Amino acid sequence: MVNLIEKYWRDQNSKRSGFTLVESIIGIAIFVILAGAVYQTFFIISKEASFNWSNTAISSLADQYLEIARNLPYSQIGTVQGNPHGNLPDLTNPTTVVTNGKTYQIYYEVTYIDDPADGTIAQGTDPAPNDYKQVKLSIKDVAANTVTNFSTNIVPTGLENLTSGGALFISVINAVGQPVPGATINITNNALNPTINLTRTSNSVGTWAEVGLPDSSNSYHIVVTKNGYSTDQTYAITTNNPNPTKPDATISNGQVTQVSFAIDQTSNLVFNTLNQTCGAIGGVGVGIEGSKLIGTSPDVFKFNNSYTSDSNGKIQLNNIEWDNYIPALLGSTYMIYGSSPIQQINVMPNTSQTFNLILGNKTTNSLLTIVKDGATGNPIEGASVNLTNTSPSYNNTLITGGSLWSQLYWNGGSGQTTWTDTTKYFQDDGGVSTTGIPLAIRLANSGGNTLTNSGWLISSTFDTGSDTTSYTTLGWQPTSQDPSTSVKFQIATNNDNTTWNFVGPDGTSNTYYTTPDTTISTTNNNNRYIRYKAYLSTNDPTKNPTITSVGINYVSGCFTPGQVFFPGLTASDTYQLSVSMPGYLTNTITGLQINGYVVKEVSLSQ
Image (cartoon, rainbow, N blue to C red; front, top):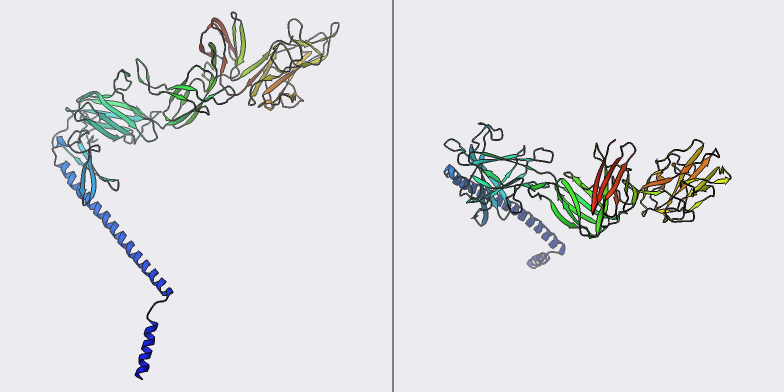
């Protein structure tokens, strides 16, 4: 019996001598979960303890260092480079403290407070605005890069006075004169010992009053900034800028110095250097000058820099302030044939704008004419600008905002495909004559004194140079005919210089241009090559219609509003410039001197 019992227990112990693989994996998983939970709990507790300990350390330091400031004599409460002056450490000269292995930086900012209870300097009702001092204590945890601030007010035991210093009242406005709150104001003075280095912030109405500053002449340098805004500042009197428009401020004992600064959101501006068909021209040197002055006698511009356009013909100016920017070419290869907008661009705050410079080969003498409405100053499109001279002989007419193809003579005959000889044309039907005196297109004689009933003439092909051409108006002279006669036109354009489909103002072959200076159908736009077809007819064999000139206005390539350019002129002081436009009085300028690159602005009155 005993043997049987022993055998049973041996069998049971043998079965319990180890774990299966599944039992081991489950056991390990349970252990990991429990260990993770314990670690997480320990981490949270440790972190919370560390945070509480850090707060306790910072609070203890704050009590200690605020008491240091409170226990100083009132006259000595100030910072090393601040206003008022004193021996307390400031941001640029912090005190370093190590507590339980953690490093802290401690510094102060001390400012005078102008309490409104007895009036304020801003209202001009408080001649002594340094009522009491506000002490701000900052404690920086160096490792965590966090700053904790504390502040307290310290009131003098005696009466306030401003006999030992002056006040600086700063106003910050935007481009339209509205206050700019939250602007950073940096005030420095390196002429004093110790020096002053203050950083302040404009209040809700864009102002800041700094009181109790030491007496000092033209040595308080003030810079006003704000994130995303332009910068305004005072300027030192130097050899390069002997007369600053806003010199470094002067503080006098018992006096208030007021200085205003204008800042606003910055903008982006792209200059494009292009040829007459809007193709990019890279490597062009451009000097760009703003209109704001920081000094006079001589003028010192706030913005005056030189650039070179990239391979795409672009000059990118980012984060610039609102101003009028004027470009000027550097170098001798190109000259400005026109620009859009005209001459300069007015950049407004918080905008992105583009300025196109249309360039061409430089010639010794040239004339850029700009035509504006005398009342509004706006550029006038479609004005006829005629430049003439007797000696040397010159006569050319251009249309503002585009170009003019004009033909005055046809006596050279037919057979010319491309318009090179200005007296020739492509084809006629035999019903017109071009050699009679005075020279004109008219109906031919059919025999004796009898005229043909009708006839037509097709011009040679004119190449505008660009498939982005827009055709504007068609005109001819004389503008009126005998009622028994008729003059009318059709236009054909293409890009292959082969397909010629003549159409009228509705874009079909069923209509005709019958009134001079009629707008050309947009069907013809975006085509490089053009021809006109003139139709003449009469109901009275004794009445002959005539055409003495034909003109087609077009805009090819880049648009230059209100401008025309005459290159390759000969120097002379006897040019005559005549500018006309329907609805305006013609303006004629005689004795115009052309010598070099001349820009002439002409105003027209309605």
